[in-house]
Amino acid sequence: HSSSTSGNTNSNSNTASAAVDPSEHAHQRRDQQQQQQRLPKGSDQQLLPLTATAGPDAAAWNALAAVLVQSDRLSDAAAAVDRAVQAAQAVGSKIPPIEGFAALIRGYRNAGMKGKAVAALRRFLSLGGKPGRVMWNDVITVCLRDSDLRTARQVVRAMELTGSVSEVDIQGYEAWFSRWEARKRATESQAAA
Image (cartoon, rainbow, N blue to C red; front, side, top):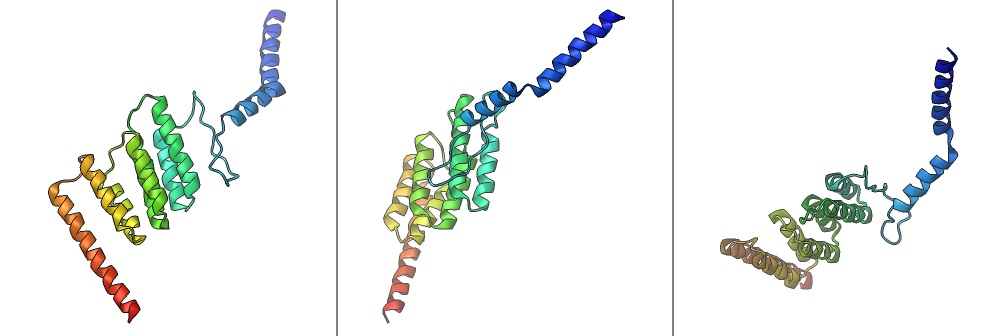
């Protein structure tokens, strides 16, 4: 009876010491702090840490980016997209996460942030991404809202170079640009009168 009691005692004492071992908790906190990535300059908030054993995958970071865009937290969304890229690369994916980039570019379009939208598209392309029509159109739209027809035409040219657009589509974009120029001239004429 005493040997079974001592076995229980050891088991209980091991469980109790593991539950209250302050060095273990300090070690976990230190690991979390080291793994945590800071957001872009000017932000004092942090994202959850990405751990090698239990961290979120690219899909989770993409979903977080989309939610952050909907909350108008574009800097945080950009950081989540960065983490999605890291997570995708960590598992050997050569394709950047289109969902996160598409959400981020849509957010930049809605906020009228042409430079950031164009930069995000360029980064996506540089990582080997193949943008969908909506992503291209979001960048073109924000360029035209900023009266930057030159950059909008460069986006269409990039579409051509990546094989994302047909000759018929190019004609459609040119018609869009012509309508935009006509509206701009009419608006400027009315403002001058």
